[in-house]
Figure: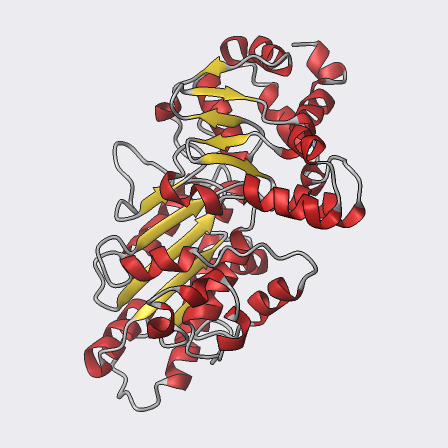
Length: 378
């Protein structure tokens, strides 16, 4: 067991030890279903503080052969699955938190080099029975392990898109990063499953994506992952009963991320409201409203007027197809609004193709961003 290869289950252990833990282990039913198949490439994007890392830690705890997690899943939904014991702690897992690597280097080339050195070191320390060839690259090492021992790996990649959020203007570095992931993961016999999570969907260059093997589950198209984006209405009602909180007020403050499958609530906001017994702007406290103002001030083709109408309860029809899945390539109001959907500032009605301000908490954030001299000059 190591930090990156077959990690322990400490992250998931902390989650279920918390005063409020909402069981999302039903996700395992789907990952088990696509394990070892062409559909086993999953990219799940959702806003900050919507449980991305918690899901990644849960999957690590379940699959990693570097720990024993049976007691942690006792009484949870996953335990009732027919496939539960077939895969419980029986797989090799490589866990990569890309934000951690980028924070150490702030440079794409150095970051990728650090990933290579760190994971290769743990692999060589673990697989001492392998007679290593000349290759020192991670791809070559994994190919050799598969060739010699017939062992495959599950890749769990958290904060996959941090480069596109923090190095927004480094297009060369972004392409290098996408090429690295493609070469490491695409059409490789040693890959058993890839679960990748972040805020942004996969970046598009030209007419194709370097990672076109992934099935994407996003805020504009959650598909059957909708119930794992945030808290469902049923889950929130149960918490309101437990903490004697007014469900109607919870709805007003935190509801609004509505998909065809039902209403979804911001997990951080709901949990904090329950624990503090008060209603306030909790989710957006994790990021200053100045970040929102940057996009508002672009004011593409009537963006300001559209936001004012949405603050009054109206909706705005948009085309999400032109969005390039980054934070710099904007050609229209539609591109800006699509980004704001992925960031959690707008809800999206997939059927009607309309955006709207989802709840009172987010509307307060828009009001804060609209105030000040910078906005008045638009």
